[in-house]
Amino acid sequence: MIAALAIAAAVAVAAVVVLHLETNLLGRAPRDGLRVLMYHRVGTPASRAQVTPEALDRQIGWLLDHGYAPVSLSRVLASVEEGAALPPRPVLLTFDDGTLDHHQALLPVLRRRGVPVALFVIGSHLGREMEYDGRPTRFLDAAQLRELVAAGAEIGLHTFTHRDLCSLSPAEVEEEMTRSLAALRDAGVPALPVLAYPFGAYPRGAAEQAPFFEALRRSGVRLAFRIGNRVNPLPLAAPFEVQRTSVRGTDRPWEFPVKVRKGRRKAFA
Image 1: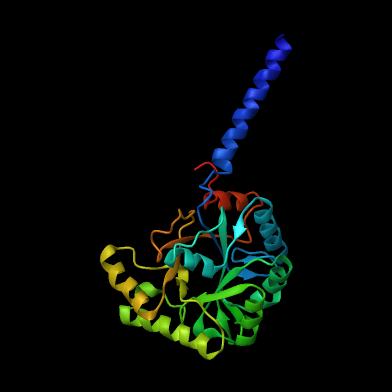
Image 2 (image 1 turned 90 degrees about the vertical axis):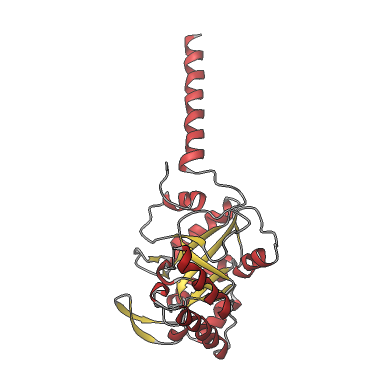
């Protein structure tokens, strides 16, 4: 009898621990929330801003194995503008800057996995080689971007010059967007009028936001992404403030599932 009670008590404790992990460490976020994952470079070695191709492949595999549905940028835009439904557990994979590694290391992963992704490119940097983030960097040219599009990537805007938009006037903000769209159009690269804010920066005060958002609308931008490390409830109520979750090459293995489920890595927050 005592042994049976002890076993029952142990089972009850284990059930409580599992429930605690599910609701806290694993984070039961709403099934219909949109996760937007933010990557930068893909390559070796792993660093804060660079995930390895092997890690990216494992992460995409984990998403697929756990019932998450990678969706395209155009599908997210359609959900905002047309009310089009997204699948349960939608996740958008985004990659910033448009550096050459997206062709060298990301492209093979896309061809193998067949999932859609969004690339946010800098209009004035197409095909250039320059100092960027403290090291010599080559950026994708038009032909390489078209190859990525053929493999399932969609192209969005990361402005024309990658300046902090908070430092610009509304007229300058509008010019950044129109020049970025024109650069891609002139290069024969299909692009969506969707923006990822450089450095995640945009005005936070209501008085500053109104002319800023109006400048985006005048330029044709219809959707924009910030950094916020949260799951976005659906339907998206603030299309110029969609939050992304940063994925880093230095994340520990347990952090990726937590970030996907909760939008942040604080397991018990």
